[in-house]
Length: 108
Image (cartoon, rainbow, N blue to C red):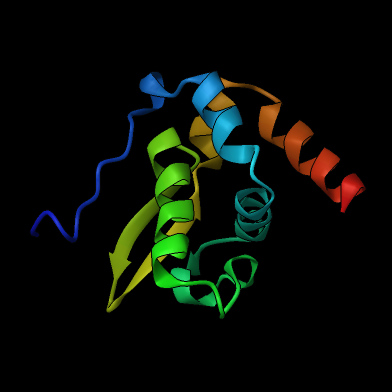
């Protein structure tokens, strides 16, 4: 596996609350996380990112979430498969994702 296939993801114990909250502060990224709550998606299928969104913007949004430790982005065939790191986030910050996702539903 070459470096283009394997992207760096922080370990569970390295997740920082401020980085997670910063990543989730953007409405587009929060919408993407809400989509991923239902299960993994290929990056090209994420409606929160919009079909007209430039590839560079889509990549940036995913990169911010990945580097904060909110999602995992893995090569799956020719696409990137995105998965919410629910177990890791719940272990590090119990109740945080439930509170954020429930408040996002009420606002949306």
